[in-house]
Length: 349
Image 1: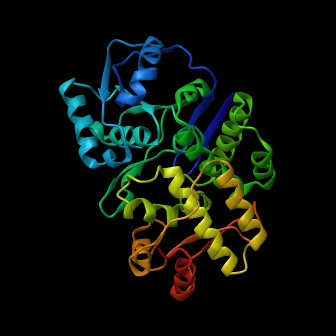
Image 2 (image 1 turned 30 degrees about the vertical axis):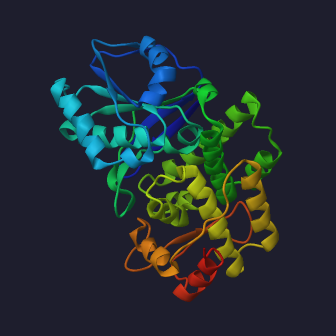
């Protein structure tokens, strides 16, 4: 299956997302695979055999969100300089969202930009993170605050990579699919409710529909000036949770799941979502082994962290919420602080 990305503004960019068994790939230039030891153990050997290039370098970085930093990017850049890579070289991101984001960001900077390819190995990266060209790293102020929009040359989604994925990582990916369904497609949401995701065929369908939805959004709005910001549903709250727990307690998709529950509580408070549907979403997340609660230690501190969110501007915090029912969305920047505080009080530890 091939799903195209066709961005027209601000400049024309197009590439394909391939959902199938990884094919043989041939390059006329030097190639480096960026990965981590966990992924390398399971997949590096088989992937390397699929690549024909004048030279193939392997760059391993530590595994974990806590290593998604500028220091790790500088480490990758140093390896590329040591190997004398040039502007026609190609990077391959073999791993989950952390590897994909860091590799893409590195590619955007090395000699002012070289090609890179996404080979996502986690469900979260396959349904979301590998599609659309958002790259970057975290710092002590927040999530992905240093980065660039930089599109890959291709995305190869091989569902067989998921056979070695831990159950917790799999669930984190389901959270991102649920996110897209709640924002854009009630029919897709219903199908997730009914789907048995222990069956590979259903997982492939989940990936394909998620990628189609995201590709449609990215084609309209590459740099998140409009509809693409809606994909951050659950993230405004989730990013704060990740930051407050030093990116070590929750996987990204787990934090987003909790963030969706919090966002839905705000939507209920504003009359944008019924209590029945909010509870329905919470049940679906829990059914897929995702956390739905978080004990806030300091309400004021949690609220202040919202201002580090990239969607906020001129002192206004942007909240992405369902708009009346599942399958619709709205971005609100006018919610009084006291209303948000009332919602956060429900999660006070």
